Length: 163
Image 1: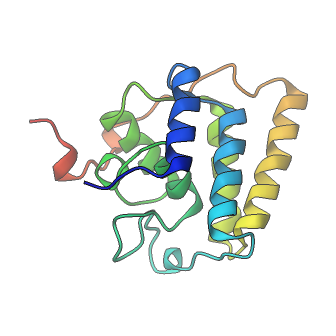
Image 2: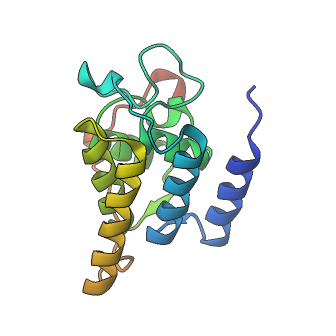
């Protein structure tokens, strides 16, 4: 069993304080921690073949910025599997139903993911997500509604099923 890092413990505590709600403020913290860990110049390239949050080989630590951010919250490969952001969040909804994401948080993650998927650095992905945060705050729609996972779209790995 893999032990949690100090950063994972800090983020898990922040999530607990928010009643298992991932909001825009927590996403900003997660992206900050992800960039601090990998560096602002880090570029993820496995997604050019096929998006894989955890990379094609290593399943112990995610390779993409959204997967890494979710991993910081303690989410495992078995709990969100591989795929693009929407099936990942839908799978997460099936395996971790207690975890709630606000629509603002999802929009920020999608902004960061879009930058990464277009060859941008994690530093740029975080900056774009931050811009999204400020725009959402200006509109007043940051954390007022929750993402509703489409469980028919979930790609639950066999190890995560509770049969």
